[in-house]
Length: 110
Image 1 (cartoon, rainbow, N blue to C red):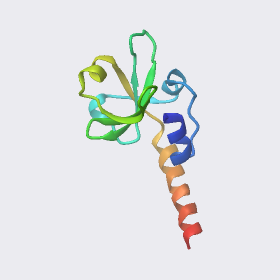
Image 2: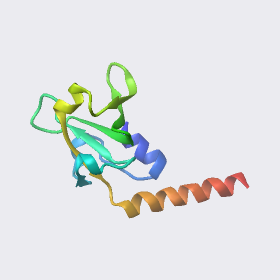
Image 3: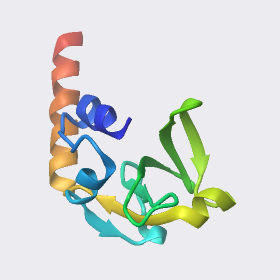
């Protein structure tokens, strides 16, 4: 899910799995998360097994193998238990790409 979202919204390539994605980010404290940051979880494992995209108000979007794409709250006991860290791609990459995509869209609409 996070791979597709970053590819479509920011035109940015992320690794295919959560561990690869974690290696590309700068870690961010939970209380400093911004919309678009990635949130990583270690679910019954010593390594990162799940990733979501933070959307604000302590909520994140992610894909569940049984329920599809969904929005969950970081304060839910399950997610609080397995939360590992937040991560942010370099801001200049995301904002520049978003600006380029917006400009391209605006030009197509005119």
